[in-house]
Amino acid sequence: MTPPSDHPGAGPAAVPPPGCPAHTATRPATHPDAHADAHPEAHTATHPEAHTAPRPDALADLFGPEHEADPTGFYERLRAEHGPVAPVRLAGDLPAWLLLGYRENLEVARTPSRFSRDSRHWGDWREGRVAPDSPLLPVVGWQPMCTFADGEEHERLRTALTQSMNRFDRRGIRRHVTRFTHQLVGEFAADGHADLVTGFAQRLPMLVLTHLLGMPDEDGPRLVEASRDLIKGTETAISSNEYVTRTLENLVARKRAQPGEDLASWLLSHPSGLTGEEVVQHLRLVLLTGNETTTNLMANTLRMVLTDPRSRASLAGGHMTLPDAIEHVLWDEPPLAVIPGRWATGDTELAGRRIRAGDMLLLGLAAGNVDPAIRPDISAPMYGNRSHLAFSGGPHECPGQDIGRAITDTGIDALLLRLPDLRLAVPESELRWTASWVSRHLVSLPAEFTPRRGDWDTLETERGLLAPDFLDRIASSQDPLEPRAEVTGPEPRPAARRPWWRSLWRPLRPGPPRPPR
Image (cartoon, rainbow, N blue to C red; front, side, top):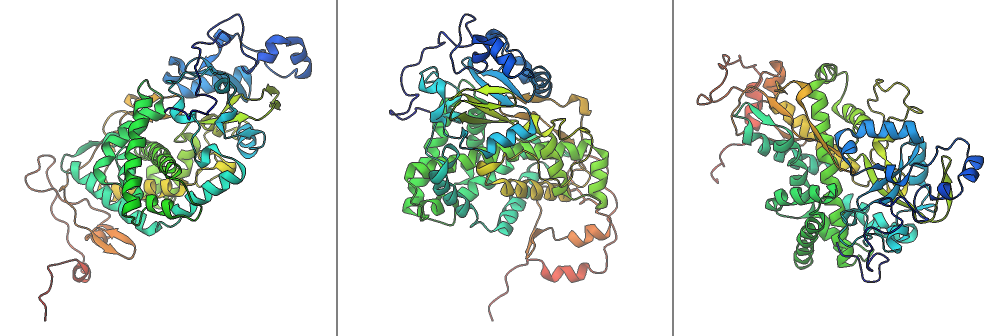
């Protein structure tokens, strides 16, 4: 992403600057704990509880191998060393504060007058220390959208986005999720095995989101790849961001000429009068955050269902609903571990740390959710409790969180209805994760089940899309569908005796059209 010509970060950058953490001699005034280095005795006297500032070259690296290998251990080490607010460094040896405390995260998220969402406050950017090709720019570089605005401008942009998103029929969204779920399951149902991350969780959210945005389904796979690369902050993040933006610019041009019942058209016609660039950037926001968060939430929830016998039994027995289970996952494994960022509007103090104007702060959602101050017993269930930090808080709380919940809830429910004997195909100890600076991803989730026929007729009802044998399967304790004869695998069981009310369901099934009278 190239910042506007009048943006503070558009000028030449020195890489690395003389005062960045790569150098041990000096550090810029905006660096976390720079004040403590200059006047350590004053810092200790004013804040005796504060930790001693680390050496510049010893700052924990959020892009380093330690964080990538074990984010949870990384956060807990920082909490033990620095308390609820820890100094870290990012790509390009840029400094930031990582918030580890639950209360500190909420304080920063809820006080935009002290901690702005507008990245033009960023001291390192204003002073030319951010390289033009920095992988941070696609995520933190200022853009004309609500996530980088405060006050009246934020209200104008946020209102346009939330009111447009509220026009979606929630029942209709669930019907689309169910339809796409059956399409995806149909691709592997006859195999008896599947990777539920690459074959399901990484594909379903983008299928739904591209539909809601008004995009063709075939755009989904490439957008999934580009959006994940962009958020990870890899070397190709800039080019991935350009691809996503270009695709959305083409979409907006089409919808301006031929509007439809979709988010792109509604943003274009909203009374707030969004510019074309503002529409593109808000579509990009929904696409990137919606796909990333929902994919991770779905993968983490499926892992819990397949690896935690108590959760599976509670769901099967009706003692816990799937939405309750999802809230528990949002506490323990939020889809985004870190949200960048906030920028101090002036010199201030937070948890004994003196924050300088222009400092970047990162919301540590995963660390805040397990803060011992609010969760002394980490094993205690949090079913149905929505006071977690998973979707941030304050005026910038995620506006699309309920859509993400609906996709996860409906998709997993339809998957389990289709494959009721779904089980993990490998020992839980063999599951692997990969981490970027903002999130942690389950690499794969191999599962197995009784092979079933790949196609599945559905019946549209007022409650959504149901299988035509829905009542049969409830009456027979959810016996699985019988596989086709040509499918190799376990011996099929004898056909279950059909309940007498099968004949009542048959007239409701779609059949051939009747001839006109």
